[in-house]
Amino acid sequence: MNTDSVICPYCPHHCRLSEGSLGFCRARTAENGRSVPLNYGKVTSIALDPIEKKPLAHFFPGSRILSVGSYGCNLRCPFCQNHEISQSSGDLMRELYDLTPERLLRISRDEKPEGNIGVAFTYNEPLTSWEYVRDASELLHEDGQKTVLVSNGCFTDDVIDEVLPVLDAMNIDLKAFHEGFYKNCDGDLETVKHFIKRAEGSCHIELTTLIIPHENDSHEEMDALSSWIASLNPEIPLHITRFFPMFQMTDRGPTDIGRMRELYDIASSHLKYVHLGNV
Ligand code: SF4
Image (cartoon, rainbow, N blue to C red; front, side):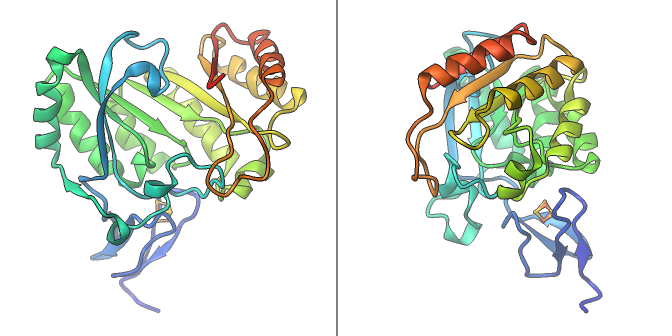
């Protein structure tokens, strides 16, 4: 066994990394006996988006936010909407820009006249390089700008402790409310629930559930999912979004609109703010 190898502590995969090897997320390797991000400051996408697109409906509504993404993800959802960047390693990316936290700050500042309030870390799974999220967010905060994270929430306390103090808002996926669904994505529901519990009360949070026919669209599951959220805080907004065939999941059509409305009604019986998306 390579004595320089290390167990990465940052998500439930706990990959054994050695110099030159890639973790399951394709974004981290080992250097000097530590897990380090290869995608630090490597940007694949950058755009000034309406904040509602994150989606965040209750955080500076009507504003815009500079949104940046890299590559890599620690999950393997067969319905991923951003699979070109999330399921890729850096050497396969055609366009990759170096964007230091300092340069990101300057670009974000320049976009202020366009209604920009700060930076959202999004598109791929940003916490595969939580160090970049932390470093850039610290700078943005010193400049009075807002910081937003869009994440699958499948990370350990080591990561949460580093990023929570520097984030103003998050949209976290709560993809389903049974472990079988998460196992199919190589994720872990209990880790995500713990992440949401930690984030609640520390910053503004909103949650998103993509409703996929025959996977997570039962009345019972929505009842359990939304009542669990309400047990944390009934004022946490929930976005229920409609599935369309995507990536490796093309064996079924879009979610029935009538079913979306039924699930909306169930969630609304527990939660104050429920939003339908893609309908
Ligand atoms: S963050 Fe990446 S390298 Fe670390 S345990 Fe998770 S998948 Fe593996």
